[in-house]
Amino acid sequence: MTWIAPEITRTPEPYVGDERTMLDGWLDYHRQTLLLKCAGLTGEQLRTPSVQPSGLTLLGLVRHLAEVEAWWFRENFAGEPVDYPYFTPETPDADHDVSAADAEADFATFHREVALAREAAAGHALDETFTEVGAKKRTFNLRWVYVHMIEEYARHNGHADLIRERIDGVTGD
Amino acid sequence: MTTWTAPEIDRTHEPLVGDERTMLEGWLDYHRDTLLHKCAGLTAEQLRTASVEPSGLSLLGLVLHMTAVERSWFRQRFTGQDLPDLYDFDTDNDADFHAATDADPEAAFAAFRAEVDAARAATAGRSLDETFTLTRSDGTRTFNLRWAYVHMIEEYARHNGHADLIRERIDGVTGD
Image (cartoon, rainbow over all chains, first blue to last red; front, side):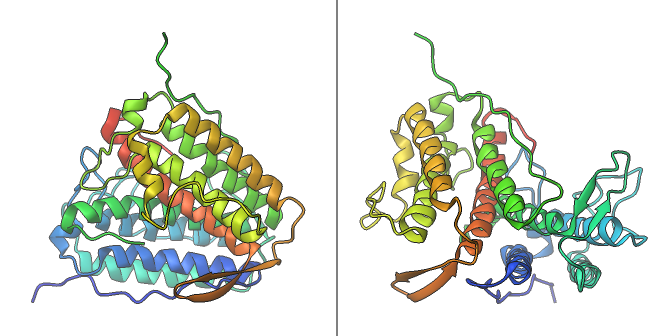
């Protein structure tokens, strides 16, 4: 039987809450929204760059965000060693190269990376700072990571909106 | 006569470390600037082009929409100012997007900037914990100002994602 991306019931974000509740709620909402944009599609549809000349695909976005979760929450904030599922120094854009990708496996990887990212941030204050991996050595706090991840997902979900619409006409928040 | 093109934007980057309010305001301003940045250098005709059909979205439509959204959340709903809607949304829920077909982009950009300034003035000095109530057909809900800030960041960011692909199909320009 052909695998299709599962249906998603999103948890709405809180309308009133403290800072951490609001950030966690909005981030989870957008993690779920990316999967919602994929729901009901086959692997082949998920690998289709439907808004050419852009090469972006829905599956490429899922793979990209899995690595972004690991990059910011685990490697940069928590200082954990990360074994990236797609990235190599020789193939830095491997996340978006979906030509030989297995969508079902990539969805499992995404869920695993989100769970690990949540663990890495749990119990840490938003004011905690860290020095970024890489040459610039800038200092960030965990608050920045949260807001960045919300806007990163939201922007890519904007890409996902238009990619999906051109695959099967489905639109919506 | 010189043809108007959308002005270049020198974006202010968000802070990398800061308290809650500083971070939210910085990211919101970054995305307000980013929307204009995605328009920079284009003519009126290009800004009105729905380049990712069947979507009807255009860059000018996004600017008109975000002008209405700024007014709606910050001034009409949060501070409760008695201001008219910018479009007849009762007749057409997407009236702002649809207005892009014949709106003057230079005037639209000026209105956008004025609305952003008014929104900033409306929220200045107000606590993120302050609540407001909104009644719609699906019921009455209470929000706090914190929600409105994070929502506006993700609303702009999502539309800037649309803007990325619309722009790329107009003239090939990409980038954050």
